[in-house]
Length: 130
Image (cartoon, rainbow, N blue to C red; front, top):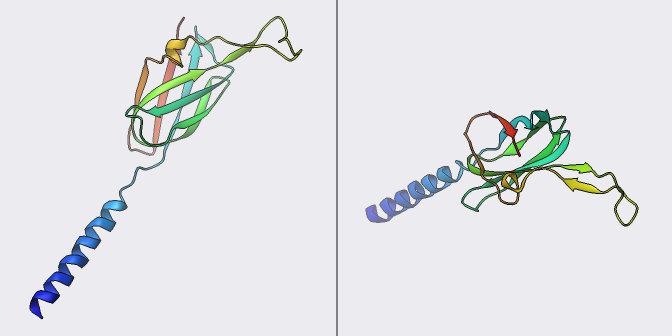
């Protein structure tokens, strides 16, 4: 009977440890800041914080008048920034012709990285150049 109680106590203890460990999941952190290109605020665009290890959720949000704010999880991130301008000539379908102007080194071939710290708010400044 004494061994049975010890086993039950051990199982309950292990269950508590496992359940408490599960409570320490990644927090959602406010990520905000500014984005300029060649010294001018990016009027409209998108910014993504992608986990550097390829696992976990992507944080993303719009850039409006050079500013962004969204929720991300803590950790090392690859940062991708995109923005378009309306071209002089319309697209073949007659709609506005949106032309990307942020270089690939900041989006599809990004070289940008940031660490989202596990604190209530992280603020970043991105001064992009050609």
